[in-house]
Length: 585
Image (cartoon, rainbow, N blue to C red):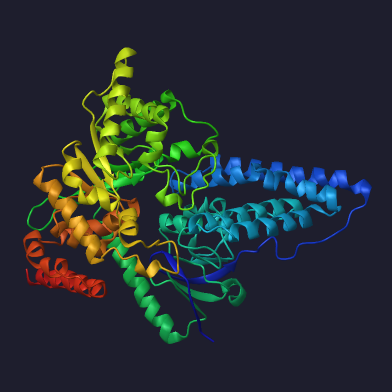
């Protein structure tokens, strides 16, 4: 009997294949009471499991393939931090000693306690970190009972078009996905902000998460369909459904082959307008893949990831070495470095914990940098030194007002003077810009642009702050609408103001990589798009099939609309009408 499950789509595309069930380690936890003489040996067994888990994660972090998603290193580092936390490394030992129970049961009791604490957290992102804790606990448990911790081993272990079905997958589980024959994966757990979701989007394979009971309903080697675009999993499809999805799979593969042919094609519209396509990166390791796609440079280097994989603040020389590596690998192409954007979901071990009721509205972004001027100036000095070796720009995150820009410029001038006093070579005239992520900055962009050289629009946060809707909160995620008229009006205001002042403007949020908005944004005047590697070819395909004269004539129908419920219909009509124009040519 055909069964259809609905979940959260995180990796686009279609896959048809045989299911491989990933066995969970904690389905049946043994409970045994110990004699006094057995306690010390049980403590030693648990401590050894912790050491083994730490060693495995450290090795996995060392062995991350170059083609793996750049976020992996940071996520595995988070798991290492959790292994070392007293709540997992010490408190289960206390339970063993106090209650006289076996290590597995002590770990279960502690896990139940931690789960309740996570469930009580109001912040959705922080509450979602419960899954990271459970993933680490499962690895510790498997080491306790001698069960293999590897989900993916050698590629030849799987038949072609194998679909992994798991309760959850940890970042460590996905390290070697790209070198295996895995066609897709589905999980019961996870949410839009889970690391599984983030990695699913980066791996570029169909994936659906948060299905609930998929692992209980799917049998080993059963034929299933994963629709990573619609967030649907179909178990035991009948011939009619199978025929339709085989057709969709052929179309999907054909489209990918056609897009791959565009790698060396210039991003130029049919009427000869060149569009800059830039990449978003977290480290120098991401650059090779972007070079292969013919990018024009890096529009967003999220520099905070270098701060997350460590126990202490990096030194200026360490930062300089990292940034020079980026410059050299870009071979003359420009890079825009965003100064560290910590807080909310990115809190390194040395940073401490925040008691803010709403971290997204608290000490984060440029607010944190201005509150920690030594850290801020250290990074700016490293950036300016590295800028001597190639074209580099500096960008400040989460700017809300002219006042913050003025404060940043004061710290920048201080950093420059410190370099002069040290007789260091640096770029005296480095270009500086700001992220447009807050409505107050968007509305006063005219005054802000008079003090800086460029702006880049972070649509992810701009949409959330404009609509007061957390896209990671499933109860209100339907309100998160990139095409909401209020959002489009803010984007139009920013873009046209920058064009009028002859200042560069780009978009580096997810909207830049969403091909359904490419033509709309070009018609609004945008000429620079910065995105993750997986989206570049689809966006380029839209660009080369577009005629800006036609787009600019027809876009007013979309921009005049004030009804959010009509936006997608108008956008679809806008895109399809242009496709008809292409065909007429």
